[in-house]
Length: 437
Image (tube, rainbow, N blue to C red; front, side, top):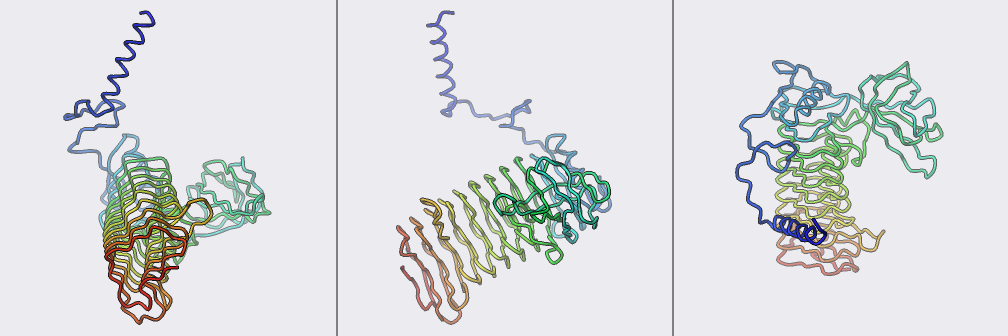
């Protein structure tokens, strides 16, 4: 084939590919299971299901190991369901979720919890390339335990947090499952704590979690920041769905996901957590948070950094200690619609002032048809739009104060904010309905 004929045939091939990309390929109407094809899969009537429980189950037990064994069996076969029977499962490490898993409980009678946490100082230096630590005393640590290692960074004074599993021991000396990659020097006062999320995963997709309860035993556990843990903690995961999950009493967040896309949280109940109820974390795109109850957390719904094109709809967000909803750093193009935000400790909906960059404010968000009631103390604010936030629409909301007006404000708009649309809102019972500047 000469050069001219080669280029001509290549052009035909590129043209065919372009036609296909334009949507002109035939519709897949009768998919088959084809090796390596993850785009289309037949709708099978039955897949493998393993039951796990304290009795009368395929795998009998009531700890993280038996749940993980069932999950790993399913993962080896590519997809399937783990059904948790009624009972209380007490975990010593996080349950790690693979792709293409359905983890289904038996309703409120399926409870995943953890024992009390313990923190022990390290007794020897470990360098960043080491894969072991030495504790100052043994405590109740066992092989297989999930732990969090904390230290002051010797170079910049920040706190380093490392999550690992103990895999071998000699006395107080433990091997961990992976290298440290941080310096645990005694000068930084390093510690080892029996802390972990109850459910966790990294770099996985297409998972359904349904009909179970997560109880973090907050009264007997130290705090674990929502950037590292929670009742649920996901990192770099896609297409997760949580349905009818209760996440409560965690000394941290109820449900936290970081850089995770197309996550759906619906008909869930996040209550009495120390920090955030639901935490769509940094860079997460298109989360859907629908028909949840977020009660008595420090913040009910916290849009983190760079969360975009999300929907929060039909949620009941009640008696959260600081804010019902908080939205801030580069969180743009989100919709908050038809939510009840009641009894927030400081502010009902807060648009945070994000002044550390050129344009990090929560722009182009819509707040529509919500009911925002009794926000804050004597100086409480129902909707607080701070900093240089722009192009926000506050439309057709019922914003009410049923207590005394005191110094309470319905909507406060920063003097630097621009393009704020207020249309069709009903504001009642405030000392100042709308405060500009």
